[in-house]
Image 1: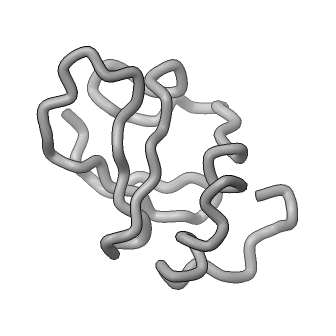
Image 2: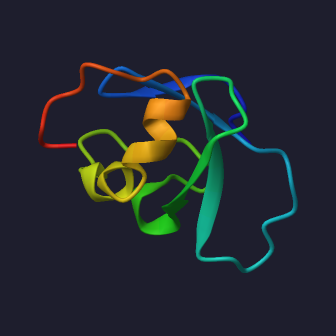
Image 3: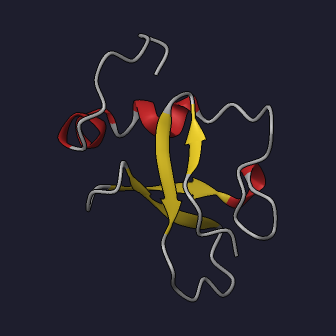
Length: 79
């Protein structure tokens, strides 16, 4: 599994170490805080790496407040 910091449009994300089994998504910590988002597996490689060119803006649109709490500011209105 890829537990290293990954970036999506400047947002640092780290995969949470846990047993995912047959879950349809994986949980990522936002900006090294306790705020997290779930990213569906269809946007991920089997090891949890975010696929190149994937558009997962909708995940962050739904979690705007979590991004604010995590200290992520100044993002474009698309997210």
